[in-house]
Amino acid sequence: MKRPGRNSFIGGIVALSLVLAGTGYAYWTDTLNVTTKATTGDFGVQFVDLGLYAQYGNETIQGGGWSIVDGIGDEGYVKDNFFMRGAGPENYNKIAKDGSIKAYKKRAEGYNNVDFNAKLVNPSVIKKDVGPYTQAIKTNASGKILLTINQMYPGYAQAFRSDIVNVGDIAAKLSDIKFEVKDLDGKDLGNLEDMIGVAVYIDREQYRPETIVDEPTFKLAELIGKDKTFNVGGVDFVRLSALKSADVQNALTNNEIKCAPATDQRLDMFIGVAMDPDAEGKYTTGIASNRNMNNEDALSQGKGIELSMDLLWDQFNVGKDKGMGNILIEQNDK
Image (cartoon, rainbow, N blue to C red):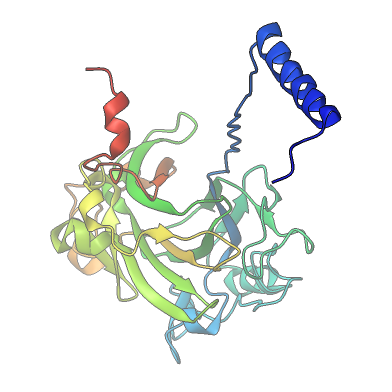
């Protein structure tokens, strides 16, 4: 084996001296870093595509449903396709087919002076694209709807419809519905809490990624019971007086709406408002052939009433945050 030359040995000493000198001069340090970034999503639902009933063929009872029951003519009702404007981006912000409301008022001339409207309160362009409802076509949306019927009378009934869409980033769950009945602009209620009724049906549908329609979510009359309703045009209407004690939570099914863009899942809501014909004279004098003179018709004439219906929403995961924990329980405060 060849012995190292002098120059090699000296070089080794120099190198070692440098290492030792470095160690003696300072401690070496290093750093590991963990950066956590998070953003929060949006949570929200909105009404869109508000209209007089009906607006689409699959909402109708093929061959004979009604939009308004008014007693005019031989049939006494307006067919469910009378106001139908149909699908299409040019129609989502209209409540009825062009000219159809004017046509109804022409029909009613001399029979009634009913006036009606349906509108989104303080509408703005939808916050997020959901199925056919998009920002590009300026689909209007809102968190509040106002339905009005003026100068209605016993036996009159009218229906409305709207979609409810999830414009947030997480699934939303309809957890409860609360009703409040009060006087309208200080008008005397009279007996309108018993004479005016409401019908509410909500179902769930989607067309993307697959078509699933008519999954029942809520049926008001079924919840309240027949003894607190009256019937107009084959529909049971719940007297407003019966809504004060309504317990809705356990009656809700299929009540989650998933979020776009993975799906266009949404709820369809149908609302009907009617005034009891009261032919038997329970609240009014009834009909001429069987008058009940113990009642006062004045209690239901020239009055006003307001029904507020709040749909209360939670995140889909409410109550699902339990578990046995994981290794991180070791850092819990004992």
